[in-house]
Length: 609
Image 1 (cartoon, one colour):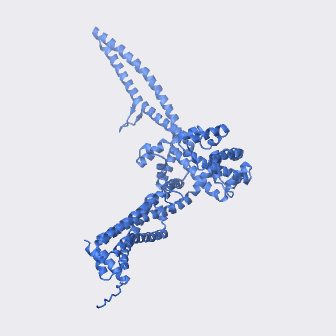
Image 2 (cartoon, one colour):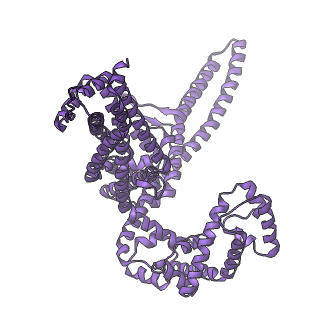
Image 3 (cartoon, rainbow, N blue to C red):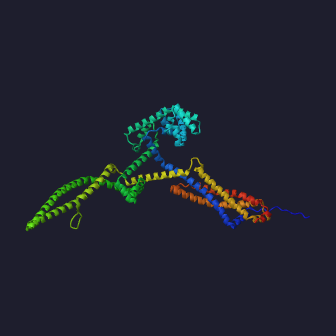
């Protein structure tokens, strides 16, 4: 019997494998396009989210830098305007550090050492923890526990054995649980009571310091004080244990002047004539006129000049009203006296006309009406002349080509009423109008700053929503991360399904390749390589699409600031990572279908339809 010579299976080079895979993809272009689309959508979603996250981070940093001067100013306005409350003190003690200025201020106001402040800080942190827990309970549970006490008042309400015993009983009845034991909470209540005098000392020291500052500055409001911030003010604050850095003086003074000028400009919006003019200029309803619209209008050069000219006009109007109103009142009084005199004269003429009318009737009856008729006609003519004069006095006369206009009493009264109302609306604000010395450039600067700060505040709110939960991966909340994970899972399932369908359609092809000497490894490499090539195409398309979508979403949320702070280097790295993710997902999804294809026996594959 002749021996059978069994030779090793032929192993194709990698380049030939790529060539055959590309040929297969071209032949099954529609199915490959579906797979590429699935990969593209998953990668695009990832790229969109990452791009927006990176842009949000850069924008947030930029906003922090731009709003830092205003926040510093607001912080100091608050500090020297109102004394600390017990709740404020608790919050600040909980976050205070030994190296911070607040630590030094509390130590000085309360005459305390570091160990006492450390105890206070520890009590404040524990108090804040319990306050947050109680704040999460509904009103139905808080009322039985503490009555009407809320916040820091809870700890004061629970002082005393009887009050605490009632709280503990209700706590157990309601079956409530907290992270610590009730015994630890009771220890906090004891520590809180023991340190109450030290907290009160800090609060008293803060109130005394504020009183000293206000007395030294003549009782001026905080913004006015800060508008004149200089080294002398800093020394005054330090003398009362407020720590103001020298480098912050200039920024605080600048922000205070902007704020005061903005308030001066807003005062003009209380004048009805200004609101009416602004409504006409903007083509808006009077009820829609508000501060943002006002600042938006005057933040341009033309708008600033319009406001400056309007204030000048109002100032001239006030001065003119001061001259015109007394003269108008005198003229009205004079005409009213004339009208009263003419009323009496007309009544007498009407009585005379009636008398002469009776005399004329009698003369006609006697057959001699001549003289009586003449007297009656003269009386009627005199009465009509007086009535015409009276009508002219009251209603006036419009101008004609040969006669000038005559102002009547009614017109003068109406004009006097209008001017009086204008005076009443303008006079209370005359000081503001007369002292309004802002140039158009200054008006534009103040309004633009106010609009910019408003825009930054809106973007800051959007960034905080986009950033998600603090400490989450890349700034995203767990919900968003789950969405990304689910999209990847859908992508893997879709690719695996497409590759399984590809295996099913190619049973005869696989059998033929095996009959021609293809190894199991070659079959697996063939399918995985095909999936990776599709993953590469999908990754590139998805990265491009995701970058465009992420940039557009950032533009809609943050405006042009998004393009100014687009992290190109991070975006390029993200695109590369997204493409790699697409390839890896494709390779992982193709492992099982490739393994099934490689395990098929040639004759078994030939029999499958």
